[in-house]
Image (cartoon, rainbow, N blue to C red; front, side, top):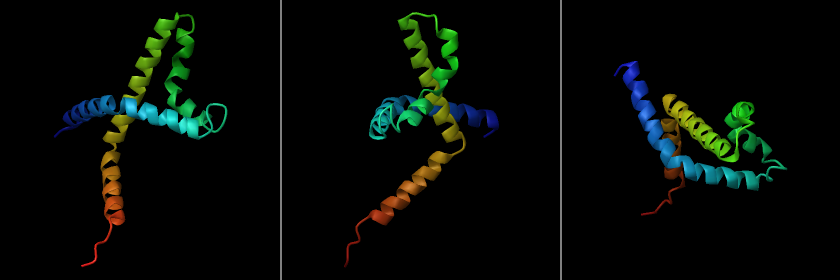
Length: 114
């Protein structure tokens, strides 16, 4: 498989997984922000990391109305999440996480004496 095929396959798999994991990841992020102390407390860093792209493109859309702003926010967050998943898969970190998960599962499996 050449590089272009690999990038194309990685992009399609990343798009699939990003669309599957978007809502659960957003819920988990909001829970972590709340547990870390909300936006006023320790959760501020998580909130700023999650909204990074919006902070970068916000000056360009500061004069638009509410609906256009929300469309830009949703599109920017979807693209940002896709890029995170794409680079995670491109660097093959998903295989490392699968290996760690299987190792933990084997380690924590109850031992049945015979």
